[in-house]
Length: 185
Image 1 (cartoon, rainbow, N blue to C red):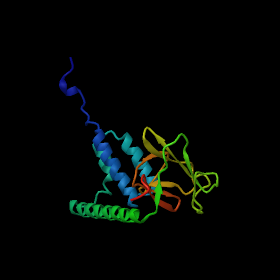
Image 2 (cartoon, rainbow, N blue to C red; image 1 turned 180 degrees about the horizontal axis):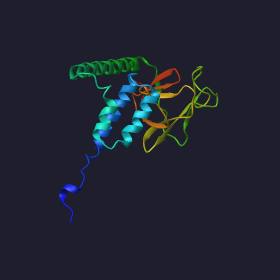
Image 3 (cartoon, one colour; image 1 turned 90 degrees about the vertical axis):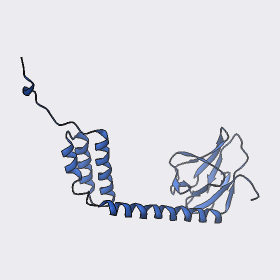
Image 4 (cartoon, one colour; image 1 turned 120 degrees about the vertical axis):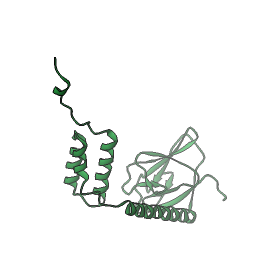
């Protein structure tokens, strides 16, 4: 018969929450330039295979030098910066020319430099066939067609498709408009 003292006990494996916290600290350290790309990738790999909490702590020991006070200050500055960028977008969108959404129909509205498009935009940053606008289920869908300089909606780049609404700010290359569902406003 074996006694209880013969069994070895091992420290508990790190939880997913601990791992996620360490990965977030590593991402932030790389974003701030505290880690080179190679060091970041190596530490991420080590964090994913760590068996003990101490191993995880060692991966971020040189990155966690900020005090709670400095974290609050940086967080406040970040929120103020985000507010000012939202304010700038709101101010800019009121001054943009309107792009009237067409009546819903069976065909998509093609946008680009090509004369055969439904909406022709003659600007160097607009691709020949840049984007298309369709209706689906009562909603307007904007799709970038692999344009060189991109399509954005409210400052965010369109990767595939996105739902657009009246009042949204859209950009095709460097040409920006405010979508409008009504001709008089």
